[in-house]
Length: 192
Image (cartoon, rainbow, N blue to C red; front, side):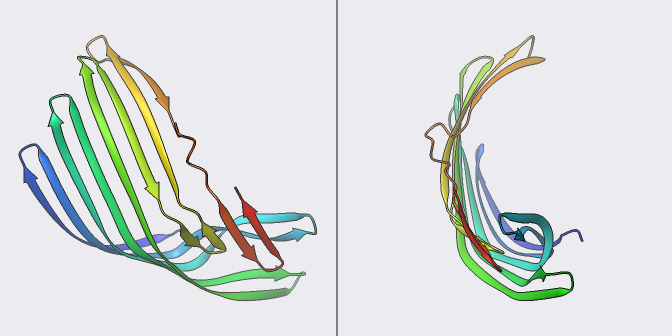
């Protein structure tokens, strides 16, 4: 069944010249939450499939600051802090007709941030440096760890900006390592 999201937001935006600051409070409810669910398939194999697990709830605040530092440097900084809750149930099949239903009630306090810089160092060229952090979070069968990453890109335009060439590097510091711990009926595993 598809997910449907009810979203309630209240925002404030303050412009100052070419720059702005925005603050947004929000409450979001995802109905028919879809997650990848693992179950024991055989003694040596897990079966992973997408299933509806219930509902999730996010209550938080997001802030964004967009600044033009100079004619050649634009900066954007944003942060999001929210309480996350997942409620529902996991259904595990045992044999051909038996089912085990496990109640689902998990929550975490999450935050993430982005710091983007755009440098216009020559007429038809742009360099971007983008960094982001995502905190650890719960999901239906476990926890994902937090991670940080730094990406960079160079874009050069030609023929009155009708053609461009891009060079992009992701995870330049090798820090986007992600770890997951998962557990369910009859299994427990760690992914790195």
